[in-house]
Length: 506
Image (cartoon, rainbow, N blue to C red; front, side, top):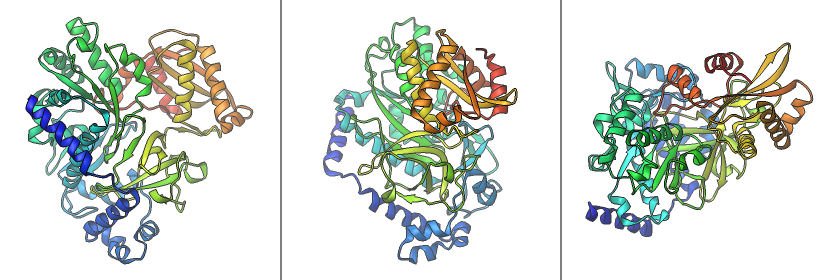
């Protein structure tokens, strides 16, 4: 293993010396042409005349003029439903072997096609992440250690002509053979569907592993680490895994979990963010001196950006028809955008549902700022998750607490609107004072919210519940562990049901 670690380390360093980061604008133009060329004879490609787009002087502009923006429902109703019925060459060449079942923050099950080309692209993007480790100055023996990937079950659901599962499960089921030497928890445990049983088995086996890095959604990784520590009666996870050095997060912001997770460690880890969605591997952090992630601009995904403004987005969080859409070269730094992607899985100008901010255009680096549907604008308050996270950070500072989960909604009560927050913590504090802190912070940083508070929005109230209640709700109505994410914003009816479930009270 030591020899292999040295070989991998040397290969990474060598690749770092001889390879160059692609020019984002050139790479994106090439990717779009490749996508159009390969899909030109599909039903989608012929319907929108991909051959004609390729022949135009400006393929990007022609593509944007001829192909509309799709959300999931529009793409499924017009095209993807036929894949589930066994049709081929619908929006990407060939048939369909895999569907990723979305278990994000929406309540309805989604079937996202995952093609062989997408699986290959995910593997290639994973290699880009590995090669970028050269920038994090890791010792050679790190590359001898095992990698614990906490994801969804790799035991995929077998239908007549395809397999179904979450993207993390599909990816893990297709890992290269050479990687199995490093991969934990291993095929048997990874296939377990029940979350509690899976974590129990991981805890039982943990002492026999030499883990160097962990990847997974922060909330579920934290629960797993606590289980291991309790099972083995440890002080920290480093008591059993002394060589643990790297944590790779993904899908949600890590910062709200940093403080509580570091209580489980003997020393801080190197934290690396990645952005793997059901629709593809979007971005990865490539350097240590930033919290931003670099879009993977040269590997099967073409990116577009819609300014996240009220006039561009309807009340359901969808891009309105006819709005101005920007390619990467036209987008600006420090502006919030709705992200659109076109991919080797046959998604076209597709609203992935996330909003992003370009932090470094030259490096094509972004940060996830929220979700298009996690945006409160019932009475003109126009609050993004980014603004809410900033208010929560202020709350944490004032009360010295860790707010790992929260959900907010603007609701109608007694013929007037108020904003309600349910906050998940493990330390009691005064809800009324918390409401004042959040209200003040939102007013100071969002003019629209400040105006709404003088008109239709009559107040803000905070309710405090143990954070475990959020996870119980997730297990009951979503799915515990894997890629499941807890929403930050809900509509009134769903929010009231959530409050009733967790027993919220001020």
